[in-house]
Amino acid sequence: MSDRDVIFERLRAGLLRRRPGADLAPTDWSAPRSSGELTARFRQQATRLASAVVGPFAAVAAPAAIAEYLNHERLPRTAVCWPALADRDWAMAGLRVEARAATATDLVGITGAFCAIAETGTLMLLSGPETPATVSLLPETHIAVVPVAHIVATMEDGWTRLRAHSTMPRAVNFVSGPSRTADIEQTVTLGAHGPYRVLIVLTTD
Image (cartoon, rainbow, N blue to C red; front, side):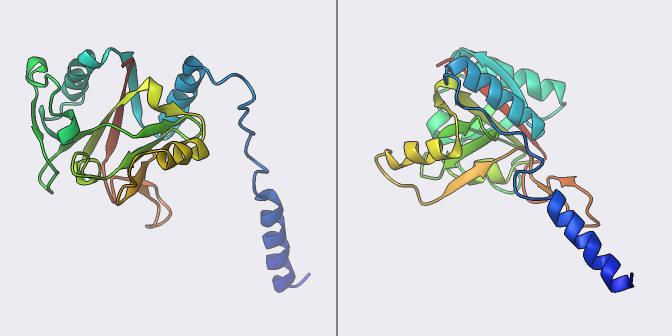
């Protein structure tokens, strides 16, 4: 067998091994999509993507959970948040949080999420005046506060929910764990194009 034949044989073998779906266990959504099942699945998938997931807690407990995480990770207790989250009692938890778009110097950004997708562990965020995209994109640490009622089963369910929304956003951003790339020597590096770490705080309301 010539060198050319060897190369093509290896290519054919690789393609056979990598047929779409050949090495992926199917996701079974035939069971009832109860809140508990969706929450467990979302937690599992988000954790696989290197997000930290805590809760669910009552929404009023979210600031304290965030403060505990920042202390544990030895991160600053200063952050920016979506204006939509400005009414949370951040100061009671010992946090100094400004409700505004993020800049390059902000280290922690706190957002909500339009929905969370259990199938993939992905957050779906909509941009707008009250939900500026920079808060999830620029800081090194992205923290998302997500009610479990906003967890949907599949990506299609997320889009269906969006189509029923009153207005379409200028942009839709999907967050699947910390930013990562393997462009350099095929070595996975976190934080190359966005946050180094992601914390998802699940709430009951």
